[in-house]
Length: 147
Image 1 (spheres, one colour):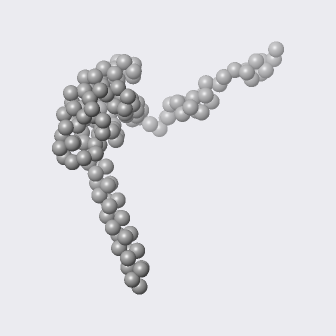
Image 2: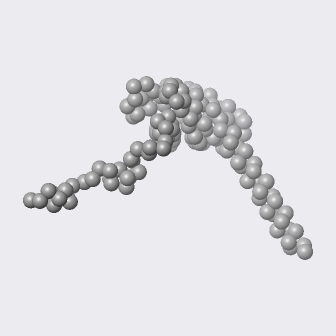
């Protein structure tokens, strides 16, 4: 059998990884890749394994990992008022050990980052801006109707 003919039936790992989106991105720092994995793992964990009903409305919005991979800031959002934010933050702190243990088992890293939970005010600001833009659009529509 010719050398090239035998290769035709084999899998090419690079092409397989590219098609699945699993190939390492050269432009992304390791801390950013670790942050992506933590984001995905904790999001799935909150949806599937969190037994605390007070965490039902909590979602992870973004994760920032320090360059030395020692600390991870997990930003979350929750529907409701400031009381709901406080309740969610307290319950996330209680579940911190469970979440870190899960990450240690799934990430296969020498050291699992410490988790710090913070409410993501950026999402709140985006909602406020959306509401302002909606008001402007409605005023513009009313102005066009009157003229």
